[in-house]
Length: 73
Image (cartoon, rainbow, N blue to C red):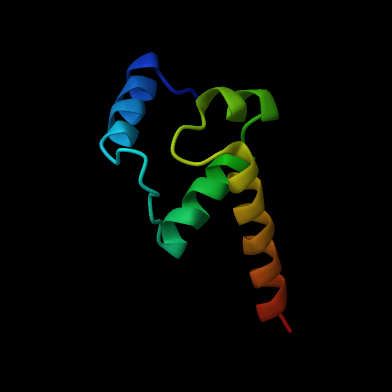
């Protein structure tokens, strides 16, 4: 998966609109971001992560896996 420089800048502008306020994600948004981030190399995640830190994305993925494991019999 590649992200263009335009997309990077677009995300920076979007983040600036929140003026330092915390962005609230739904569970579905967290899941989608975590799954997509997991497909990327750690170096790439650090370069492109704009609205959530790479560490946060990893945490969300671990929580997603834990939730799924809990639901399975």
